[in-house]
Image (cartoon, rainbow, N blue to C red; front, side, top):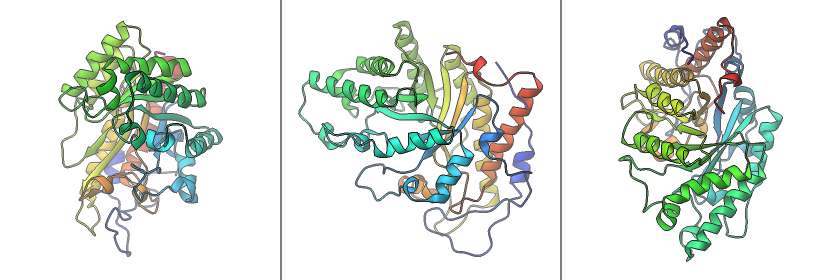
Length: 393
């Protein structure tokens, strides 16, 4: 294992961030306070601060959480967004552009346009890609959910989809979220919500991993879910399932926590312990969708105290990942409040990302960057990178 020491200067300085002068706040998530100039030294990007072998990523906004939603696609038109996306991050995850209703809108038609563009952008910017997602209960097209299929037909549809999508990006996607959110918060399989489990039984999950592995033997295959940051009924269910699948030699390589947090709730203090137990099974672990939403009255901005607390949440999640040997992938679910999904789904909450609508860095950004820099310095001082030689796979 590789514990790191973390300086507290990041949050102490972040708390001094001053609010923007002038301007009006938007209802969803207006531009927030700026950090004072030179408060954190150089403006080196997050990816440059990270230890060797550790990727810092973001979701690529767009695609809509359902096709009928009026949802922005900044990747297709916002030059500043693309500039920051390429500069700051060493990993990207399509937010919606690889989900079933977007990439497979009709039974006999796939739409790879946006997914292809993201993968090519990543190649040009020397970024890795996390594929998201292959088996899920949500954001499935109507033709699938409302279709009248036999079990044999449905099984064939899933196998074809996984084979075609994973195969298309063979060698281009580092990790895949194969099975997404298959348990409820009580640790029960979503047998009613998830068409695949409901119609084909729990064993279809193992088959999904096998098919994905066959389509791209080098890609790392993950379970991914929310509310599994702590040791609880839901994460216990994943732990038991993974142990069983590994005994069956099913190609499961990783377990990832999403990390959709809110400052209105307590921080999951046993996050590192939870990651460690999956690490002990020989799995890679990852943080895949981190954001930290805040309660802010409509038309208002977060207070310095709120931003300080948010920064602490971001920092503590990153520290937990850095503390676990197999946790080498850390992704935030969007980097600017301008295109955050949070206000769409959580009324009264917002400002969940690390940059304002104007792409100004917030205290949470500096908390991440300073923590990465501390880990990189500490790592080099010990004579070895937090890098590939530590990986288990």
